[in-house]
Length: 347
Length: 242
Ligand SMILES: Nc1ncnc2c1ncn2[C@@H]1O[C@H](COP(=O)(O)OP(=O)(O)OP(=O)(O)O)[C@@H](O)[C@H]1O
Ligand SMILES: [Mg+2]
Image (cartoon, rainbow over all chains, first blue to last red; front, top):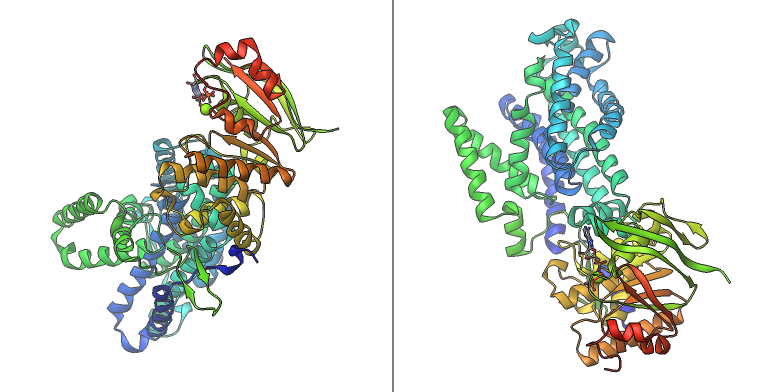
């Protein structure tokens, strides 16, 4: 028997096992929110879930695949408009429209990817923004969806979701909760799979990744497609909550991209945990300062600058380096098993 | 006998600098070829051309009897080419073990389960088990070079391309490295090894190729090549018997 056979590879850590238990408990509490939370709280929670979803997806794009898009609002808006259109013109149940706009966004993302993947770096970023502007201008032309001034979701459609307002609120809250669970599960399982190993390799060194058999283009392509689909579904839910849509709100670069980048960058780009921390910080800051108007934006900017200077890898990067904590164990550790099968770390 | 690798009139220039100038040679399966040449001779560029990280201007590369000139670097890696980078290219935020795992899953196409076992074996063989959980970014230059070798081996290569992995090693470490590469040869791997430490090279290879200005100056039995007048001229200052 060689020495190697006494080593094993494990993925979970004590802190990640605790985190999994805590997450399960939290999920149960959150599912029960309609019984303990008020209407306003549920709206806020939904918004947090949807923002977190956007952040996790943008992090997958930029933090892992190196696709620094500043045009994800294209898919948020597409999802929102798609839901309105499917509900108003085809009479589909709004919740059924949510996965459908996801599929539609993935299909639309195919030609877009072929177009913008020719660009790299800053040109790629600008390309994504131009695409988003094209989306905004196009939807502003659709007069049956209110043109430039937008439209509201007809009352009849809203009522068709559920008889009472309380039940409607609960349903749209649960949909947002289901969305973040889905997004986290997809991204987490992806990163743990062999494709995730490849993706993480691309994040760290594209040249080496290519030379080790990773098809960088196709890997990025799939990331772009999945991110587009899920972002559109998130967009659909965002505007299902608002019940009103307009081109400027739907394709807003501040709301759906700038804030999301802020969240990911201060939380810790290229980590699973970063967007979680970033979203919490963002909503705390908003809670305290949003009433202050422009001062609020200055506070966001100041926080971003301080974090980038003090902790270039974000708040989570700092915590991880200092305390070795892991909530989502996508990393693998080699541990040594002695003859009594008690494990110890070799390092 | 079929050749594993064949270069036919391979040429590449960066402006006026010819890094590969009508380069041709063939390598049989299981052969070990040493490559020497002065700085800037085009040795690393030859690896870049073979593995597809650099596109040739003209000429052809046959691998296992088929032209691979139009294949991507990734496709060539999947078909069994693995290289170490002269300037190490680690996946810095991933651990040493995970670095090898990339090679085993992507290049060798192993399942994660099989890859785990294979990579542990490679780390053991290369003597990096004690660094397995360290982020590659925290390694010293020498450790990074060793990781280059480990990662290339984790790819289960048929053709292994090594670019200056012995520089900076102690006498003892160098002997270990030579022993490791010799043991690899037993498994039937075909090897091209670029190395300035000529005595290490000569302990392993059965053929020596000398490059200068992208051209083949000499190619053949190592002792005969080292005795060649032109080679001696280029190699003044490098002690062949050291
Ligand atoms: N991408 C590039 N663009 C321009 N010039 C390059 C490029 N890559 C290499 N060169 C030049 O080509 C020549 C050959 O480089 P190469 O790295 O192949 O040499 P080498 O034989 O490996 O040298 P060394 O022994 O120093 O590693 C050098 O003059 C180098 O500066
Ligand atoms: Mg070189």
